[in-house]
Structures are given as C-alpha cells and as structure tokens.
Image (cartoon, rainbow, N blue to C red; front, side, top):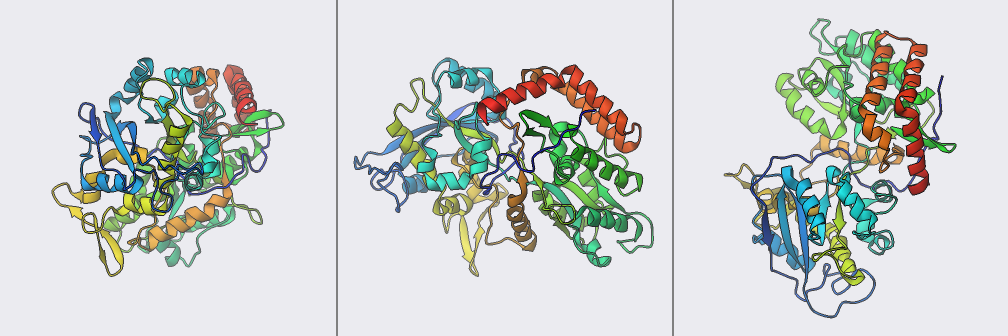
Length: 540
C-alpha cells in the first residue's frame, strides 16, 4: 500500500493578482494579415510621462529616436483589427513605441511559429500558447539560446514584476528559466458556488468548514429550500471527467482543502501524486459520504458542462466550477427561478485549520522575446526597451486605457461612473471593436474591478483576493515526463476509475490502493522518477 503525505505548502511566494483557466477561444480568421501603426510619443521614448526617457535600466534614453516592436499573435476573431484607428494611435502616443503586428489565425498558429523558427524569421515578440510551448522545434530553439531569458532583468521593471507576481513568474518557467511574460489568469479560480437565497430561506450561513458544507448540502436536500413542499432539490452537483479537469470539478478542490498536493507535490526527495496520499483518500471518503447520503448528483462521473445546466434549472444548491462563473449563474438562474441569487463559497477547511486552495498555474501561455534570426531583438539595450514598454503597459494608466479606452469615443462618464459606449452594428462595445484581439499580447490583469461592478462582482473579487493567501501550487507545473507523454492517458484512466469506483462503492479502500499499485506498475513509477529529476534540476 502506497501512502505518502505532502508538505503543507510548496513553492511559496508572493501571490498577487493572476489567472488559470484557459480562457482562450475563438474561430479561425481570415488569412494572415499585418497591421502597423506609425504614431509615436512626443520624444519617442519608451514609457509614460512618469518614466519617459528611461529604458527601465536606470539609464536615460536621450537619442530621441522612436522605437518599433514587431509582434505576432493569434487571431481568434474573423478579421484582424484596424490598427490605424484612434485607440492604437493613442496607445502608441502614451508608450512612445510603434507597433507592427502580424495576426495569424489560431488554427494555423502553431504551424506558423514552427515555420518561422525554421526560417529564422520570428518577430521580436510573439505569443506562445500552451501548444506552442510543447512544440519540440521551439524547445530545441530555446535550448540553443534562441530566446531571451528574463531572469536577470525582470526585477528592474517593478510595475511589470509586481503585475505578474512572484508565484506566477515561478510557475511560468520553462526548463527552469523565465522565457516570457505570462498571460495572466486567476490563481485561486477553482471552487464552489452556492444559492444565497436558499441559505437565507433556511436561515443558514455560508459554509466555511467541511462539516458546515456537509450540513448545508443535507439541508438543501431534505429541508425544502425552494419552499414548494416537494422533495425535488439536492445539495451538490459536480462532475469528474478527467485528471486535468479535477481542479474545477470539485475533486481536487476538496482534496487540496483536506491537505493533499495540488496535482503533484515534492517531499523527502521525491515527487508525490495527489492520489497517492492519505489526505486524498480522506477527501474521497468525504465525497463518498455525500454520494451515499444522497446529497451529491448520482451522475457525477458522466456529467460535464451539464452540471451548470442542472444548477441553472434550480434543482441544486451548490455547484463546482470556476468561481468567476458566478456572474453567468446569476444571469441564467433568475430567468428560471425568480429571486434566485448565487454567491461564492469561501475556501473550505477543517475546524481549527487554515483554508487551502488548489491554485491554477496563474497563466495561459507566455509572451516570448526572440534572440535569433533577422527579426530578433539584437541587443540587451533593445531588450530593455521592449521590457520597459511592457513595464509601462502594466501601469494603472495603461491598464485603464485597455479597460475603458478614450473618453468620448470608447466611454462616457455618467454620475461619476465610466460606461462603455456600444457599437450597435457590432453588438459590442466600441472599445472591443477597436482593440480586437491585440489584448493577447498587450497583457491584461486576470480580473478587473470596474466602476460599474455590482455587489456580486465586488464580492467575487474580494473572495479572490482573500483566497490568494491560501493558494497551493502544483509542483509539476513546467515539468515534463516522457513516460507520461507516452502513456499518461492510460495512467489517468486507472486512477480516475479507481476514484469513481471507490465513491460509488464498487471497490473498498484496499481495492483503491491496489489500483494505485497498478498505476505504478504500468508506468507511474517512471513518471515519478522523471518528474523528480526535472524538479530537482529546474526547481529545487
């Protein structure tokens, strides 16, 4: 029987505003197109008025020459934005940098990056999504010093450094080094959402401990929270469709809260998978109790997105997911149930212990800086100019520009609140029309507080900030196992099936550990060794 425990916190760092979740979607666009803007700042310097003339290295740039950055990024919409519009002109006026952007349809993006690596024609800056970061051509170029490592530079740019946050810089390392600026996502994104109106109807408080969570699930099932006199409600709806999705579907959220690793941990000289720990088994027993007592949906092993559909019909009181989906729940559910209101469950914990959150990686892809080929950043001086540009983009002034645009064109102020101006023909804001897909390479915060936020949004952001202190990182982020690449799908199925069979009562605890032994024999032991070697080379 293999049972291991995990240290309470791995890779601890300053947990600032971040993200997980994928969040990148769209359709293939038109053939590759290039947009170029020629406006530059008053004196051509990189930075805003507070640091104009400073390239971020502490040395003044007095050349007076404008600086151009060539860029490439994915195109998710039907066509590339018109980069000659007033928003782009204002952006370049504020930064003092000319932009030349090559937008490539997302379906051909990986192939285009591969081709540009082979022909040594990558631009100075490009986005590397998850698939690009796994591309062997890119990894070989990286190992051949084809891209700038930023480790020795980023702390010279405090706005940029703090905007990303120490933990996400650490998470985004490739082969142990920082090779790009992470595209941010919320770190403490996974969790549960709950019917506030049901809590109010039953005079219950929002659960914070495991015992309270169970009692609320019980009350939602047995005590007629919708007041219709029928036994037609249930406590929790969740799903379990894949190891990679456990974070948002509730299993990993609960396992980490009980003390298990977030996917993988490192203890006593070895990497430890979460499902090999006693804490994970404790979480499975807790979920099994909910299942056996009738407070958890019976189809959890098959349900996926349908869990939201079921919740939005008014049948369930608690749903697992990404907590920033609370807005969608508060849009959909009240259309079916008048007066329904949904809020976020705090990070759960055992009585007398601190909460624990299973953090996302905090990013989805990185913005990389080319060091080889005709279009590369040729010198450290030019690299610092590019980093100073991104340092400027991280300032509040430039973030406001990305959020609201230009007054009178993209937003207007009503009663002290900035409201976006709509483009009726496009059925979206004028700012969205003008910016287009450029946000993928200009950086954005994982979430943004706006003047128009309602109480639900405000509570969500408050919760995110509270949870950041309790985030547990996955120690395997950025690591690679050749064995897992080859047979990971088969290995995942072994442990997924074992968890489902245990919860549903088809195997007991001894049967579960026998399945873990099978996982080890089928390749899991090699995965542990390979992850351990990578961790000790790149992270220890």
